[in-house]
Length: 499
Ligand code: MLC
Ligand code: AMP
Image 1 (spheres, helix red, strand yellow):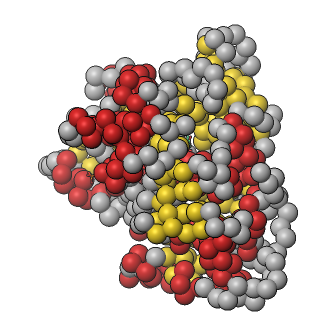
Image 2 (cartoon, protein in one colour):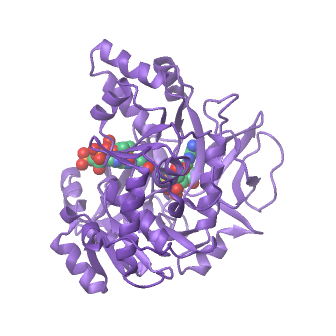
């Protein structure tokens, strides 16, 4: 296993690197694509000097070509959520000050073109950028160079750009290759969104660095993926809990022999992983009952990569996330930042590791505020029980986890307040069997106005990514507020029947 940064060192062999729509691409072919794209991107320059190259491309050979090509050329890759609304894209592109947006031909809407024109950003497809591969090797870059910018919802209203370096990404990948024993004969389906660390690092980059095979899907296509599983195509499966729930719901629609075949496909894999959100204990148990697989649950975050994991060998405990990964130091601290040392006592998870992000893009204040004495404060609460960490929740009620996506209640409230019928609104995450938490809006209407759920959903559809749109709407006369006028969301949750 190479300890160097892999995009410049893809093996020149015939092993299958990627499969897209039944078309296979060997590592040699991928390398050649990336070389041509890098050449076109450089366009005679020696390197990109950390220019931000954004891309708006679903999981595909093109996506991988752009990601690796930008890294080879010395740019910062900014993969964008392909489900974004135009207003969200405007924020990402202007915050990153991207110089170029690489798009799929079918994603080049007039709206996107005029946005790029307004922001002075060039726009091109992968095919347009391809050029004959350079004879000379790609530029040599130090591993402190900035490599990747991902947008994450914080407690503040607008998503911040989380910047990782080649160093932090290499540390994250090598740590997982070791902990989960990646092999070059592994085959893994990749259906997770490719603007988040889970899909990009845990699946795609680990797979490619290990020399394994990654099957690309633009979204979670239950039927096709289940068929492949029944045919024993895959050895490893990584997903958010919602996907395991959706699979179980899907099984209920199938004849028994088909369910048996899919479950047998899972049974024969070497590893099933769950993460990005809490895996409920009943789900963990049900999965084991159906497939024989003991889910390996792990805990991570955009800023830290993966931090804590149940073991590959040894006890994988339901409801717990296990122990710190190799190279990750974890401590728990109370609200006064005093270390919590006893088992069973809750504290905020704080992390020190080579895996950590470098900074929030052009936001030194937010970066500094997220560290205490060199420890990154995750905002997640945990306890240690019998040597394993168990996540208890988050310090902020304004962070919602829905189907593995981290959402800012304040960002959604900010948009909903523009609705002409809404006078006041509070957004909450309420417990939900499928999504973990379901985005719920509680609104006070303007005098003489009315609003129903379908109207709200329709109004939201071009203003936010579909998965942020509230799943429920409650109307109230007034929101509960404390003496300072702040909405007391825990009271609101209680009013809605949740503790
Ligand atoms: C889709 N929908 C969601 C949703 N995903 N609603 C709430 N929360 C979500 N996460 C809605 C759509 O808007 C649509 O609504 C309906 O569900 C069907 O959409 P779909 O696209 O067909 O859904 P599906 O493909 O089933 O998507 C579900 C999912 C997806 C679970 C596959 O959400 C997903 O890929 N989640 C993973 C996110 C992830 O990778 N997070 C990792 C972040 S990194 P309607 O009303 O129009 O029908 C991180 C660090 C770490 O957290 O530790 O990993
Ligand atoms: P993101 O900012 O999108 O990377 O999401 C990171 C957040 O996901 C963490 O801060 C946790 O709140 C949550 N998370 C990730 N893995 C788990 C897990 N196994 N259990 C509970 N929460 C998790």
